[in-house]
Image 1: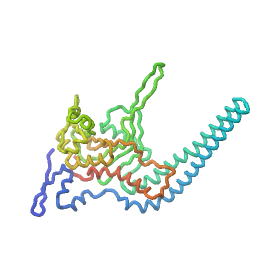
Image 2: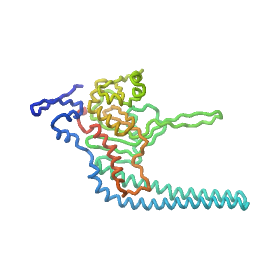
Image 3: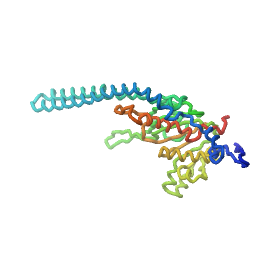
Image 4: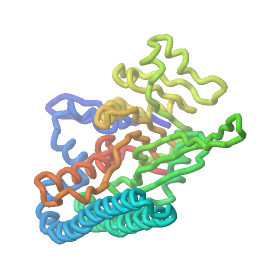
Length: 369
């Protein structure tokens, strides 16, 4: 792989442009309009998207109000059924009624409460979730990035992307995928989804009873994006927990043992404080992790405030963002016309789709073979 450089002249001065720095070195180059053109946002701004969205939300708000009234009525009837059932049982016992009559009254009250809870409380919430995601979140996403599609129930393809990343080696025994967004953001093919993967263990007590325990492997946002370059090896960028915990001694723990991967030490001190890099090809890893890319990765970690991890394989960049936040989930009690409501969800969408711009993936430095 050859290290391409280009020289640009301006005002009698010559500027060296290193292609592997993925254009960010142009910050010091006088042609600032060139940088603006290269990194022009591939997504519509919130200000552009809001007027149309506000016009379309009124109808959905009417549906929300109807379902919310049904749910509140259901909660009231549950309270009434509970009170009547409890009063009947207490009265029956006080009057010395046969126990089976008292028990029958209690069971009837519980059945009534269960039916009301299901049809008047649970179903409206589920119905609203479906309507909210199809009639609110999907148009919001389309208003920001026209070339992407949204699958509220998730796509199984994301599990293949997750495995292809090789970021997690534990066997998956149970998984949940939802809110898959896929398509093109600018020039970049992108797939992202909320994912929760788990493995199980079992334990047996002294009485021979077996209990299954579930353990989280990963829970958060998983992203797969086209890096527009065929990789010869694999590069992994992980949170540097060892050095942060043990200081200089932590570096000894970073060195791979019984592995084909090599520890890659880079020159950016901010990046080195946050991440540890291991790769099968040192040269390729350094080309991928240019000065600007390292800066962008540090900023992305700060933006999400968690241990973001990356891998580069199969011409794709994989990003695992662990978070407990459940994106795009509605609250039946929230007024969709309340000030800031649309903006809040639009910010969530731009936060996730904006990863392509945060990492400069729309800037085409390499050509695929």
